[in-house]
Image (cartoon, rainbow, N blue to C red; front, top):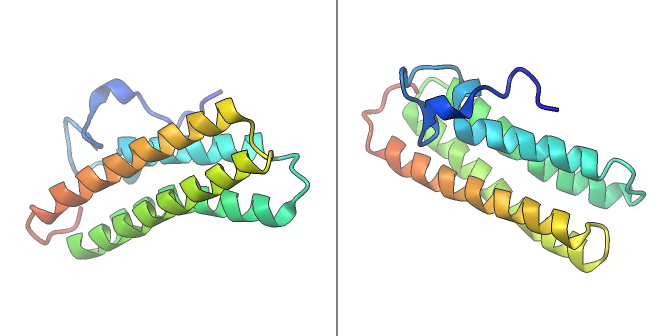
Length: 141
């Protein structure tokens, strides 16, 4: 089910590859988990007829890994941190939409709770990465 770009998670610690913190963003555990969650949401809601809800929730889910990647590719640590904050905000938006989707019957409870749990873990990982990056010198990631 997983594509090749979901790399081996055993090599990763705290969101950054052990052997080299200057790896591409695809090596970040938080990016890979967010991309996987976004893919799961797209697949899980592909047949939902409420296009407005489906569009909003898939955009929120897609925004998380997209902001991580965009920030990582920026030239400064300050920009990276800013985009990590955007990603964290999108994780909160996504959780809100999942709660509502469960409540109105668009998302079954087991799936919704799984997505909520993963979104919360991603948010925690983002918070830890933000904290770690704030302690670094202002160099590119």
